[in-house]
Amino acid sequence: MKKALKITGITLAAFVGLVLIVVGIALAMLTSSGRLTKIIKHYAPQLVNCETELGKASLTLFKTFPNVGVGIEHVALINPMGGSPSDTLANIDDLTLVLDIKKLLKEKEIVVRQCILENAFVNIYTDSVGNSNLNIFNTQDNTDTTSSTFDYLVNLEEIKLKNSTAFLTDVRTQFAMQVIGFDLDLKGNFQDNDLNAELSMKVNDFEMMNYAAPFALKNVSLGFNGSMKQFDQIEGVLTAFKPDFHFHIDEPLKNDTVNITLPFQFISNIDFLFDPNLIDFKNCTFRLGQSDLSLQGRVTGIKDQMESHGSTVKGELKLNTDLLNVKEIVELINGLDLSKDAKPKDTVNKESGPFMVPEGIDLAIDLNTKKTVYGSIDFDDLRGTVTMKDNALVLQEISFTNKAAGVQLSALYQSPHEDSLFFAMDLHLKDMQIKDLLHLVPYFDTLVPMLKTFDGQAEFNIDVETNLKPNYQPNISTLRAAANVKGKNLTVNDKFTFTKITDMLLVSTDGAYCVDTLDVQLAFFDKKLNLWPSQIAIGKYKAVADGYMTPDKYAEYHISLTETPFPLHHGLKISGPFDKLKFDLETSKYPTHYKPLSRSERKQLHDNIRKKTADRLKEKSL
Image (cartoon, rainbow, N blue to C red; front, side, top):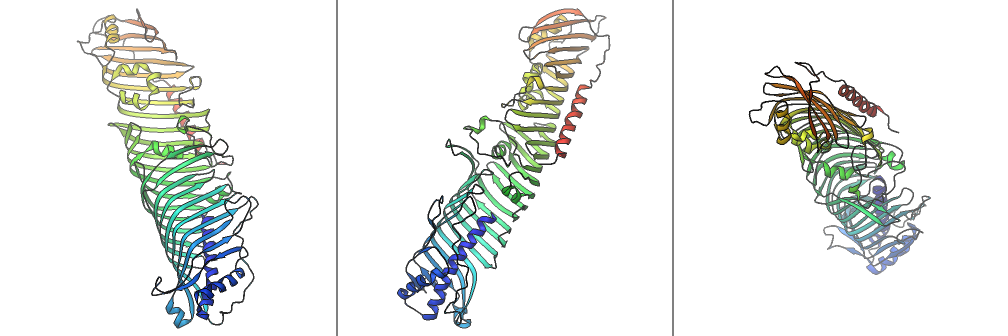
């Protein structure tokens, strides 16, 4: 940003300086337009050392009334360089400078109030060793014949560009920017490289192309009110309206392009401070797709990262929103890599790959959202902290509600490579519908198929850690999980199996298909889902169930009656493939009034996940 602004300022200063020679001579001699043109061409080489093209020059009164102006029908600076997209450094079809007539007549000062450039083309190019086509200005002092008569002062109050195009290329940093078809109106005052300004701009096509953060804007209307100091610090309020915005990643060899289109519907009231190594969002409100966002906080290390891809961008932000669409944000971030080895992706379909947390970022975001959506899943009152740190995403004490269920979540996701993903989760859900849990965590249905047997509300405590495949499926050989499920007044969906079990155990259900209470403890390790002794209550009957199931859906469960209205205690063995279970009566495994003991597996896993998360946050970024 600093480089683009400084180059823009230098370029404008070049044109202003070139035409000041014209102004001084013209006003001193009150010459005709024909003679004025000849004099401009004579003195132009004193300012620049490249080939110039200058068209007809004339004084203007009506166009710039009540001020006087100097207009040139054509101005071009030509400075060829190998590798540059064009031999032309700058070309302007029509250039007009407006002067303060009162200062001119009363105080003999040439004060430039307005600069108007129509159909301007600017091409700034820097090669791999730092040579630039902008190095065209003579540094020696030139004696001007008008210096004894007039004093020069540039006090620009307005710069206008109409239907302009600009290209900026720096081979050293692989930085490229192009702006096509833009109109600009910059009002304010510009002195000693400091600018207090009000800006409005319309852009047909703006594209930033580099490895760190390629993006494009189309059909943009921008507004800015603020100040710039030495082109190093920008502070003010930025507004933008309905641009089409998208990141893109190009593979130059294969000529493949991956686009993620994320339209900003509007941006308003971005009150910010920018210098080369800091962005301070004082009050930033905007809409991204469906999401309306309010952002405050600071991001540092921007300059260091742009100059050295091995450095880290750090920040702490607060994000408040009425609606947050997580999928849109994930698509925006996915593939953004600030590492020193970052290269364009050659993936044809970005959505087919896993979400890769960017490298070179240490960013903590304090969330406070009223409504959050991810695909068909929605949450209310989401709060907590999200941290992105060198290929790791950490969710700290995230809380939200989902269809009247309270949810608390801490999680760790690491993505050093697409084929090396790690996920750990500590999840607590209170009074959540079982079917909603299976919708929220689809793989839980596969892992614990018995849950889909029930409908109703339950409380879940779940701890999981596993390596993931690129499609997010757990790698079973690395999966460790433990869960405790407690429910009341649950409805049974599998009426055939329920009737078979209750009939064989001589349990009377009065024709109802329900379970009064359920307290289940599960643990997955050694490629096997273990059901620890867990209690089930139906009316006056209580039973204890235990057993296991393998990933290929072979199961062996035991159900033992522990409390009945009759002095009869026996059990039932259920075994075989899950879709072809065998039922056999057996002796009860557990004594009367057995009370299941709390297992330690979940607590151990819970403590281990918390430690891994804390250690990941303490690690220093490289």
